Amino acid sequence: MQQLLSSHPENEHMISEATLAVAARNTFNAVLLLELLLDRQPHIPISERVMIAAVSNHYNVGSMLKLLLARNPGVRITESIVIAAVQRDSDDWLEVVHLLLSSDSNFQVTESIIIAALKIPQKRKARLTQMSQFPDFGVYRRNVG
Image 1 (tube, one colour):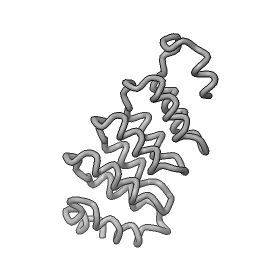
Image 2 (cartoon, helix red, strand yellow; image 1 turned 45 degrees about the horizontal axis):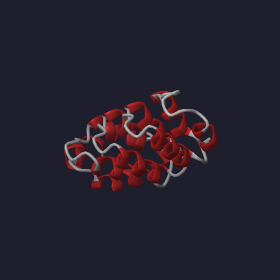
Image 3 (cartoon, helix red, strand yellow; image 1 turned 180 degrees about the horizontal axis):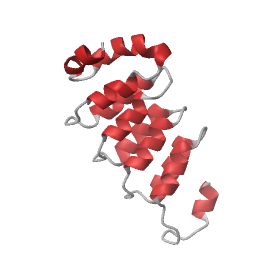
């Protein structure tokens, strides 16, 4: 990939949102691919589509999010991104959610996010306990507990 990028003049091919999203979904090399693409075109905005692709990946999600958030600290965290993160069927789902929430101090956890997090039946009880770490969780606990 690096050879391919370096063999073309800098502005010959603009890196698109779709290219970043495909790189973020790459199973084994997402962080490296994103690094190469963002080094090539550092001012490309990180969209909701790219963030959802990143949190939906099964490998190196924490590293990928740290890279994306560092390269574009103003990225807007949306309810759709957080819902994609809470629906992860992995042990690191809470860490991923914390990375997202800590990057946007104005983000409010919604009822839709809580409900989405509880959709994995075999993990519902554990997640209910873990979600007590979410800001404003108490507002929703009485409705989902």
